[in-house]
Length: 468
Ligand code: NAD
Image (cartoon, rainbow, N blue to C red; front, side, top):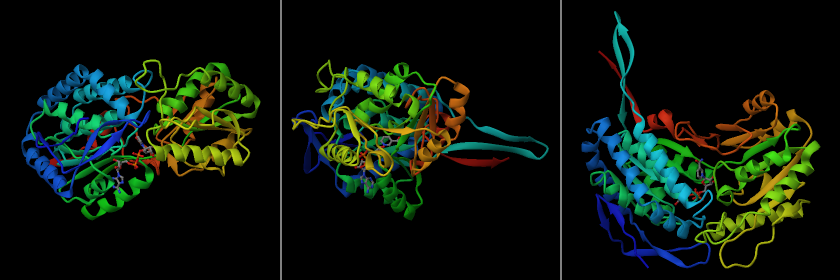
C-alpha cells in the first residue's frame, strides 16, 4: 500500500509517522496518510509565504490560465481521482458519487478561471478619482471535511490562487489521500510553494487557526469545530470564511403532488447518504398529504441500490466512518423510543463496513435529536403540521441556517414562505442545488461569509481604496 507524502514547496516531504486510511465499505487499508508535525506546518507556511511574493505579481490572465490548466489536469485524471475518492470516502463511483464530485471540482475550477476582479472606479470627477483595488491577502489556510473532500478542496484552493494568494491545505484525516493527489496535480501547473498540503490529526488544524504566518483561514466542517477555529483565530485576527453544519428544512405545502416530488425530496435528503452540509434534514409535511408523501418516499427509497462504492451498480454507499454511523444509529434509536414510526430501514446489519440503511422515520417531532440536531446520514425525520405560520416558526426555531426548501404547486405562495425561512439558500421544489456562479453560505450558526461566484472570490482579497 502506498505511503503518501506531504507536498511542501513543490516537493514530496516524508514524515516519520504514517496512519492507515481505511475503506469505509470493508475496512481494508487504502493507503497511508503522512502525519505532519508542527515543524512541517511551519515549513509549509514559510514556503507559501516565499511563493506569495512572486505569485501575487502574476497577471490576472496568467492566473486564469493556470486555473484552466488545473481543470484540464483534473479532467485527464478524473477516473483515477474518482476511484481513489471512492476507496477512502466510500461514495459510489456512479450516481451523485465520485465521478460527479470530480466533475463538480472541474466545473468550479473553470468558473473561477473565468472570473475577474478589475479595478472599480467609485468616483471620477471634480472631487477627484477614487478607485477600489482588490488585492490578495497572503497565505490562505484551508481546512476541509470528509464528505466532499476533493470538491471542497477546489472550492477553497482555486479561488484563493485565482485571486493571487498562496495556500496551505489540511484535509480531514478520514479522507486525506485524494486531496494529496489533487495537490500533486496542481503542482504540475503552479510554481513551487503556491499550493502546499499538510495532513495529520486535528491538532494540525488547531495549530493552523492560531498560526501567525497564515493570513486567512477558510474552514468547512462542523459548527462545533468552527467555533474553536474562530476563537483561536482571534489572536492573529485572521480573516475567516466558515462553512459549517446545517439542519435544513423542507416544507411540503398542501397543494403539492406527492408522487411528483418524491424523487426530488429523496435526493435532497439522501445525496451522499445524507453526508452533505445542505442536505434536507427535517421534512415537514402538511397533514392533508402526510401519508401520501410518506408512501411515495418509501416507494422511491425501496429501489435505490446501496453497496460498495467500487461496484458500478451502487448508487449510495456506506457512511464514511464509525463515529458518524454511531451518531445516526443513536439518533434513530432515540426517535423510535420517543414514538417515531420507522417506515423503512432503521436496522443496520453487523457489517462489514459502515453501512446504515436508508431510513425514513414518521410521527416524530421537535424534542428528539433526529429533528433538533444534524444527523449527517441517511435517516430522515418526517414531521406532521397543519398550520403554515406555525411550521415557519418551528422551521426557524433552530440555531442553524444553511439551506431550506418549499414544495408546492402555487409558486407565489411557495416563494412567500421561502422568503420567511432563515437560511442562506432556499429552493422551490428542489433542495441542495448549488452552482459555481451563485454565492453559497450559511447564516446564524451555519457559518459566515460566502463561497462561489464573484462574492466568493472577493473573500480571498482585501479592498484598498485609492484616492488619486
Ligand atoms: P469536523 O469539524 O470534525 O472536521 C473538519 C475539519 O476540521 C477536519 O479537517 C478536521 O481535522 C479539522 N479540525 C478538527 N478539529 C479542529 C480544530 N480544533 N481546529 C481546526 N481544525 C480542526 O467536520 P467533519 O466531520 O469533517 O465534516 C462534517 C461537518 O462539516 C458537518 O457538520 C457538515 O454539515 C459540515 N460541512 C459544511 C459544509 C458547508 O459548506 N457549510 C460543507 C461540508 C460539510
